[in-house]
Length: 464
Image (tube, rainbow, N blue to C red; front, side):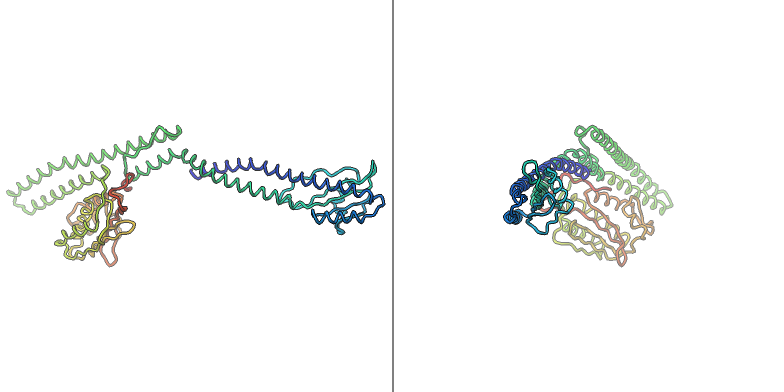
């Protein structure tokens, strides 16, 4: 829309400039044409007076000299013909007075009438100007003077003036576009821009995004009101879902604890000890699911407080805690890698990824690396059996378990929580099968700008 408005406004300004400049160019061309006509008509009249004696039987030598000198100074050609249309004197011997445009002027002059003012000379009309004047005394026409004048000087002057006016017009158009049209278009589209920004923030997870509904034209105010109402409904719906999960998780906590105690008490009087143990394991698993759901419900509820996190240091420190569990754990990280995240995010990510590596790739080497580019990337790569190709793209979904890991203890919510938390701070998580077997999980976080201590005010969570 911005480009269309700029194009329309620029076109209108251009048409206005052309409408203003065209009369100026036309008036200047007409003035120069009239000046040339008057000058050459004056010259033709003067030669008509000089030619009277020659046509009455005098010598033409002096007249020829004047005509030749005139041709050398002003260009073109001049000829004097008698009443029989015979050339008596000329500045150019090769001048053909029988040419249609010349013969027509000669006929007019011998008829006793002068030449009318010619049409305006434009740069693209490459032609000569022919005019004539009758030679006579009293009422008798003795002959005619014909002037064939070049129009190069007039057409050049008009072209130069046209070029300067075109340059001035383009400069004016550019200045008007920058100084008037562009600000005017921005002013018109400001409500649309505000709506676009709010929609992007809402799509990115910022449910508090709203637009002013009291500015701009009525149509946009109505649209802004509808957008704000939609945002309110989305925020209420999301909050209701979080509240439902949180309340359900909280309410399930006490019954699960009571159920576990009853199962433990039954174990003392029950002969099926193995069955009791399996029931306790399922109770514990159900309890972990409830706790994970409670954690997951809190993601996105509030905008996270982003701080500068030294990822490299946090990775080395956390991996030291996991070395007793993962004997083949290696770490490759630079001295410093500062990212914008929550204070506990790196620990949460590593705990989930390394726990998965210990459960699903136990005994195989696990490598953790950190690299710094446009973003700070934390990668965990194991050398276990990996996942089926169709399962890789499903990693991170809630309650997803790989087809070969159905019997391994877990809730299927660990990586879902990691993905949600990473997206919540504007990062990204990718999962891929590693070359040579195993799985590679990368978490990309926004790199902290030099001198910044927190995320910019307009930074919102990434789109889920």
